[in-house]
Image 1: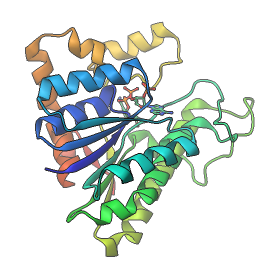
Image 2 (image 1 turned 120 degrees about the vertical axis):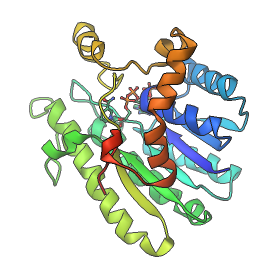
Image 3 (image 1 turned 90 degrees about the vertical axis):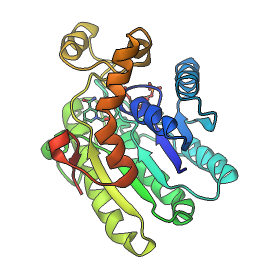
Image 4 (image 1 turned 90 degrees about the horizontal axis):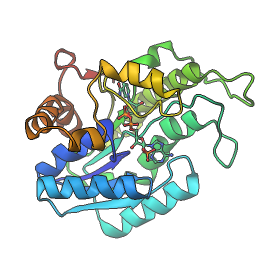
Length: 260
Ligand SMILES: NC(=O)c1ccc[n+]([C@@H]2O[C@H](COP(=O)([O-])OP(=O)(O)OC[C@H]3O[C@@H](n4cnc5c(N)ncnc54)[C@H](OP(=O)(O)O)[C@@H]3O)[C@@H](O)[C@H]2O)c1
């Protein structure tokens, strides 16, 4: 059994990862925004897997204080973490900031993984074979570093901010891998492939529907309303991602890219 922390596990990639870790009887801490969507996802994962060793930790990953509070809760509950999966991510159509003025995609896609990795390092050191998986995107290739510090809506480009934030996370993963080598902590970036996503939720609905029409819908609502066979198929397709997340191995050929 592994102790696994997953952010953004109430839909999409995070939900698929949580389903499959849950089936493997690992102990899960799901770091999600508090609310009905997350409660429903938790209920679904527990009911489907029969694994009751799963807890929801409410967090707003855009806010430093909230991340700090979530980490304190985890530290109270366990002595070690085997796998930290920084999956939560977003692309904001409009220029948006956290309460301290930091642009939101940078805050959630890059800063939150940084804070969680550093804040939970003590627990990761408690594992025999700890790993940190940062879920990024192939679009990191379009990013620039140092990232542009957007100060207002006029300068802002949603696509660029997203790509910059993912590039920053890829570079951060590489640097963490180097720094944590002596602690035996493996740090990887993972591009999950192209799937229907809620990460573009504040774009026009029609546009999202058109994009998502050609991609696998992984929202909880879509999974719950699909046949048992389809639900199983989704799990089977998530296996390469799971192997990568759990063991840090594998392979572009199976649709999951290893970036560092
Ligand atoms: N789908 C793809 O094709 C694709 C391709 C490349 C990379 N990715 C990456 O894969 C990851 C997962 O994306 P997805 O497609 O599975 O999208 P998704 O279904 O929208 O999942 C994103 C998750 O992030 C959470 N999140 C966003 N902001 C948060 C915040 N401030 N605090 C707490 N949780 C927050 C969301 O929670 P709420 O619903 O509560 O907001 C949701 O659980 C992202 O990092 C994305 O960039 C996806």
